[in-house]
Length: 304
Image (tube, rainbow, N blue to C red; front, top):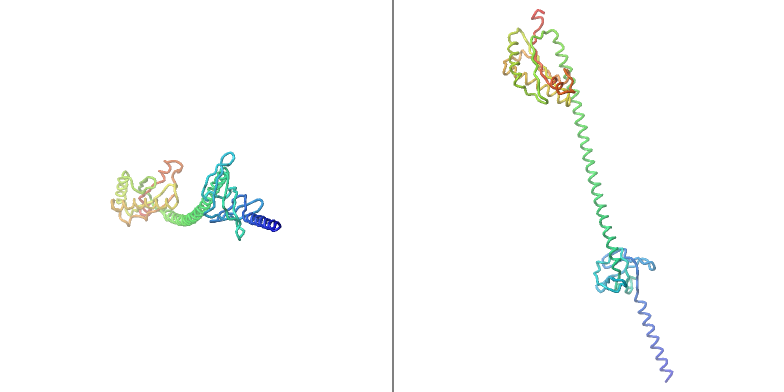
């Protein structure tokens, strides 16, 4: 009987040891650094166990320890479990070798450091995005500049063509007027113009009217009208201005002074071909902005 009692006690003691062993195998503790979060799972890097997947459940307690001895506890939400936070996890492993957390503990100072790290990561990402946007804007601006450069090159080519055409027109006009050596100049009026203008100042109208009256008293007269411009600005613009100035003077002679079109040579747009003064001064520019009107008579008619 006594032997039976000893055997029963031994069996009970063995069962208790076995139960404690099973419980010990199921309970686990992990200490490491959170390196990632994905839904209810977080990855903890442990120096001993390596990377461990920790499962968070609604029952998981998140505690922040503070104070000199870290004895003050504060319950926090799972949002506090950010990457970079050192934690101590207690729980049990499931069939997938994942640690199902009962409690997750950390120090208040460690949470502050981790949050500072996260705050540093976000501006860096924002800065990278801003840099990317700046790069894209720079590429767009470069494309716009290239398009503008192409347009400028095209305009320059067109301007050069106009200049070449104007030079040819000036050469032809000079040749035509150079053939007037057989004519006497019996009267002349010079009309000066404002910068960039082709409008005739009122002070020159009486002079033009007087010249026209003089011409009408001469047998077989011709009026020669030549427009000029200063060399300031583009050649195409100056050529255009010299033509407009000559046309306006001719219009006045025909419409107001009654000069017949048959007695007028085609107005000459001389551009900047015959500068009478240097354009380096305001006075020189003003002297070059002009229209010269001459009364011509063939030397054979006048007997000279």
